[in-house]
Structures are given as C-alpha cells and as structure tokens.
Image 1 (cartoon, helix red, strand yellow):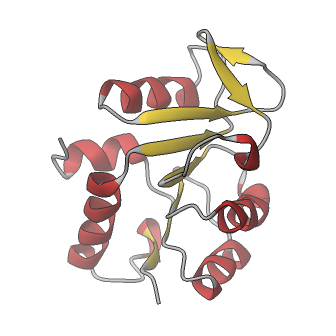
Image 2: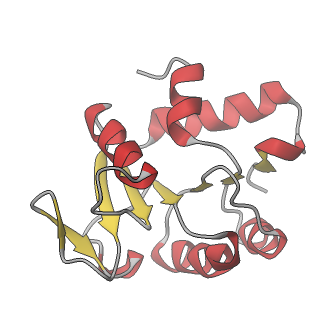
Image 3: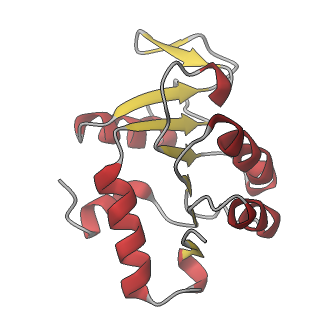
Length: 149
C-alpha cells in the first residue's frame, strides 16, 4: 500500500513522512494545482508560481477562469493533456474526496492537500487506490525544508 499520512497528526514517524514527501517532490515533473487562483495575492497563485520557478510544469485547474498569466486554466483534472505527478489541492476539505476520486480516475501519482485540508474519507479513498496522499502540509514549505532542487 502507498504511503499516506496527515502531516499534522504524525500518523507515520517524521523520517518516513520526510522520505515520502522527498520522493514525491524529487520524482515529479507535472503538478496540477486544483483551485489555482488568477489573483496574484492568493496563496494558490503564489505557490504555483514558486513551483514553476522550481522547474515543475504546472497546470491550473479552475473552471471559473480560462487563462492565468496567458496559460490555459483547465476545468478539471481530466482536461489536462499530460500525465499528472502531483495534484496539489487548494480547495476546502469538504471537496477533497471528490478531488481524490478525480486524481484516481486520471492516474495521478499523488495528491498533496495544503495546510488545513484534511478529510478522513479522502484518506480512505486514496489508501484503497494505493495513491499516496499528503494532507495538511504546504508543498512550498516542505520543498524548502527538505532542500529539494
């Protein structure tokens, strides 16, 4: 079964958590940011920009906008024309189970839910599909803390 944990609850020991996050971040090339805002003052926008600068191909997933900074914004994960290594989630926790279902459906390699985004059903769905999931952890903070890149 894949490694699944909630950073805030320390389900696994911290060394295992760090190894899982490091492996996900080092092996990823494409990241779909679900809930990517077109407002540069929003956290999702700022973190997506950081991920682009770090060398990842970042796809915006936001059905309410057609473009963000001249790049297309996709209505759903299924619309992205590439395989997805990380689904980075900037939606409220109540939407996480649906995002996990979509990630499973498109064959994404992992789900990373930002700080404060935790949902037990999403964890169960991910575990049942052997999909690594990280909840309640900022991808930018962990990238820097783990000295990726």
